[in-house]
Structures are given as structure tokens and as C-alpha cells.
Amino acid sequence: MSFKIPVFFQLVEDSPVPGIESPVTQPLSEQVHGLSLTEMILSSSPVVQGVLIILVIMSVWTWGIVISKTMAMRRARKESDEFEDIFWGSKNLAQIGEISRSLVESPVAQVFTAGHRELTAIINARNAEGSRGVDPGAVESVDRALKKAKMEEVTRLETGTTMLATTASAAPFIGLFGTVWGIMNAFIGLSQVKSSSIQAVAPGISEALIATAIGLAAAIPAAIFYNYFMQQVRVMSRSMDTFSAEFLNIAKRHFLK
Image 1 (cartoon, one colour):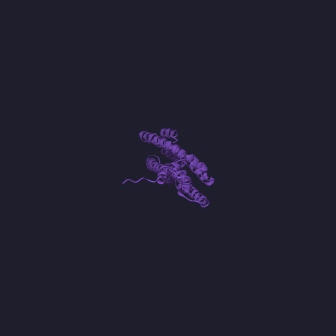
Image 2 (cartoon, rainbow, N blue to C red):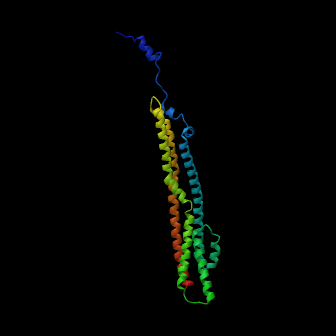
Image 3 (cartoon, rainbow, N blue to C red):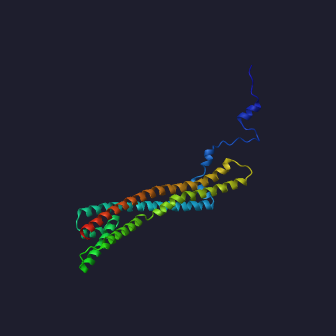
């Protein structure tokens, strides 16, 4: 015994009944990807746009510091290695002093220049006075000159790292502020419409989350390179301490006795 499907049900299955709209068949992913990144940024609130501009400036500044510091650190290591080879391969301090003046990027060479200048001044003053005794303050003067030069070189090597630390610590919070502000505006707009759905609030939340993403994109490289550069500064600082101790011993044995 066969059954026939009523014509009414066939109409409902094959074609929509007049007055009844068919459900939306467009996938949610196509709705979300309908807005490009540029469109979401341009459609965001002025506060969020201001946050994004600040983060972009901080990111560009960070990468500029990274590039310049990388080149400066490379030159400092190269010239310091060159100076130490010359220093331990020569016994003429005057000749070494002439060479060290050309190695302006080497922290170790600049420490030597300061110590050699102070040692030469002490020897010249002692020869002018005709004194042959040991001046108790001579060693301390050379030591102070070495330490002062070292601190100046450490300060020079640390130039720019403060901005990296600031970006690493502040950029995520600046981005979070933009995100919170954007989400707040999205929910305020949602409260003003009659029907609420995830499609209505999703674009606003997506625009707001861009601020957090850009904040993290600026902070992560800044944190990585800050730690890297500070490690390089510590290594060079230990090299200057070691050289200062060796130079002071040479001065005491051969010139201040």
C-alpha cells in the first residue's frame, strides 16, 4: 500500500511558503571576515584609534632602538677584542694609548685611556717635584679614574634600554585599556538595539581586541631585546672590571713603586 506526500508538504519542502522567510544560510565566518583589519581599525572609536597610534609609535621606536643597539654592541665587542689583543701584545703604554684613541666604540679601550691619562699625570707631577717616594693616594687616584670611566661606558651602553623596558611593561596595559574601552562601547551600542545577538556585538569586540594584539606585538620584542642587551652590558662590565684590576696591578708594579 503506497502513500503519497500531500502537495502542501511538498511545497514547504521544495520552495518557501509565501510570507515565510527562509533562514540565513551565510556562514558566520564569512560575516566575520567581511571586515578587513583596516576597516575594523577605521571604524573603531577615536580613543581606540589613539591607543593604536601610540602603540604603533612605540613599536617603531622599539625596532629603531633594537637595530641601532645591535650594531653598536657588535662594534663594541669587535673593537674591545681588538684592543685587548693589542694591549697584551705590546709593552709600550704610550703606543697603546695612541691606538686606543681610535677605538672609540670599545668600552675597555676607553677605560684604559682614562687610567693611562691619570697615571701619566701622576708620573709627570712626581718627576716635576723630584720625588721618588710612593704616593699613597696615587693608586687610589688611578682606581677612581678607572671606575669613573667604567660607569660612563656602562651608561653609554645602556642608552635606549629604558625605552625598551618601558615598552615591554606599558604596551600590554595600553592595549588592554583600548580593548576595555572598545568592549564597553560595543555593549553600550548593544543595549540600544531591540534585538541582541552575537552577530551584533562580535564586530565591536573584534575591533577592541586589535588593541591588545598590537600591544603584545610591541611588548614581546621589547622584553626579549631588553634582556639580551642588558646581558651584553653585564658581560662588558665584567670585562672592564677585569681589565681595570689588571691595569692597576701593572701600574703598581712598574710605575707607582
